[in-house]
Length: 338
Image 1: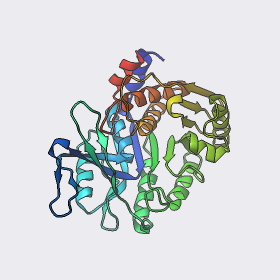
Image 2: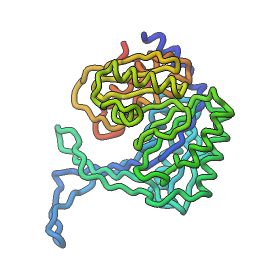
Image 3: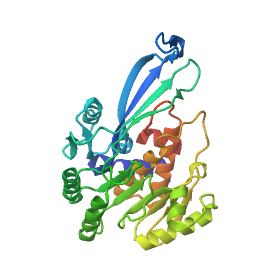
């Protein structure tokens, strides 16, 4: 793939409409100055003084951030936040992003805002060091009225979106956006619109999903296929091809330092190795960059090998951004591709 073809594909991005349905969270970074360390008079324990706080959309919001960086014309988050301070920050952060429409993003008193609070120690001349994270999650099933709103949103968007991305980030089943009811309703949408481009990623695995494009890592592939996570690339390609033929949809497998494998519905496969490291790396957000770039590229008409090439290069851009969950622009992808 050359830079001219990349430009031809990305020139179509401003006309695309993509929906992102899933678990949006607030990534809140607490930047700590180690030179201002104190000891608490009351407890005798060390005090970490926070000198700066920054927030951005995380989880499904990381995929959305990457779509914004790619220059998508219209992006529709389908999800929820709580009526709380974190929800206010999350909605404000989403609203500030170019091309993002919040018509299908719901504020509800029935849930807390999913939050990753990340304390970062910023010492001069050293990479940011993350301390133990403080998470806020929901531990009860998503209320049915809220599920109805989310399901209705996807049904409405399916008629006009060029692609739909599903991101299931929660650890406990039925507590987020992608519930069993949601998947059942999605199956009906697919039956009515079999050509709709839908790509799914789930940290709990993709068992039981309707026929959509599947994006997973090696461990998740092992669960679906029985393949060992450390199998050689040709074996991964064979397993991905089997799943692609079965689902009649694309299958993508990220292999960390070994790159990305893709399989088309006809069983054709491709493998793209990772790019060389160019310094310190932070792998947080790399998978979400891959998902966003796969969806955008396929919606723009990219081939299998073109899509995994763009996604692979984008991941390389992102992992070299330290202390944040990064994104990749077409210009950054083009610079590495060249």
